[in-house]
Length: 506
Image (cartoon, rainbow, N blue to C red; front, side, top):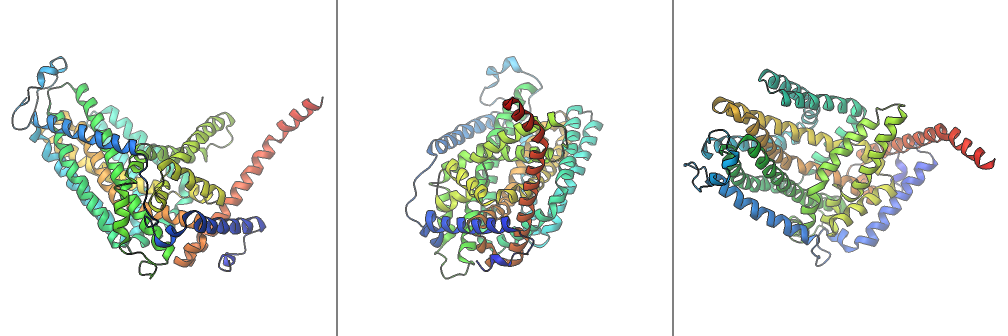
């Protein structure tokens, strides 16, 4: 309690009571709900139950079916056209002359190599040049999208030129809307990188999962190359590639979130015990976290991976747009409706659920609700809403994917100019997943820091007192800002309320 009182004196009675309430809420949560699991570590509180088994079954069935389809589609054009006699089923959709799988498969291999290289480069540079790498992600992405737009217009690909131009504009507007939040975001990311680089075993897990992803990509790219080389018309090719891309996105998200669960569990454990070398640390915690992540909690990971990324991205965009609307009441009303709808979805699908899954072994929806209620009851949700670390990491992932897709598109244009967009877009998704696997360890540290700060702020104070003070100051400012905004809205609506009361009185 004395450490919490060292927060700068800018706090008034309300913020003081908020800090006290937050601390007491965290302490009761730690001592009450988690029991010995918080002391001994994730996965050590006894046997865990399997959760979301239905989605585990769906994911595994999807892997088997898609794997068989990829093998058939790739083999049909491997070294011989129509090896499996599949063209008889697609004669109504015949389009361009068919090529061979090996015409495109090496291009995917090069794209995977570029994506893996970029991912490892991110991991290495984040340790020594974290601040610079994050700034590159924020500022270079807008320029890169604009350059791609110009190149697409120059190559007479109008649709993609317009798409990249819109993307560049939206990225620029988003940066402008959150420019005041970037200093705090960079601070949080620097501390997260500092944490993960002290856990080399977690970094090795991320590299191992990149290798696993590359193995799956070897099969996926074999089938995708067979689709691109097939005799089906462009419409049929695109539909097949979209289906395969959705499958790849889900598979990549599952692997990323598996690393997320493992890494966040380890970071949480280190913060709880006060260091990796603490005597109270359990034996071999990483392998225990890994075992639970790929067994009892894997169904929850598969379930959450379907929706979480899309809802988070939509929430970031709406928040940024909402902060710049001004006094346009009609537009503000529409955006507020979407905002509250997305906020409701976030309660059931948020990345902080994975920390609860790692520590307590709950189901995904249960974990998501508990995490969000913890943030709202302690006021930490105001701090999370102000932080843009997830968006910044996503920008780095997008930049890596665009660079990978560009390499594949340039190589494809040399011999197959009519397949540039197909190869570039699918290779870009491939690169995003590989870079995302490298970036997810940093995001795991960020989520664990916020969970620990909500559970018990003294955990952060013990780890980094200066960072704790900066977080507390920012939280106090955000709570004051929200209070002033609520007062403004109340004063703005006061005449309407008075007229309604007068009408009722009459």
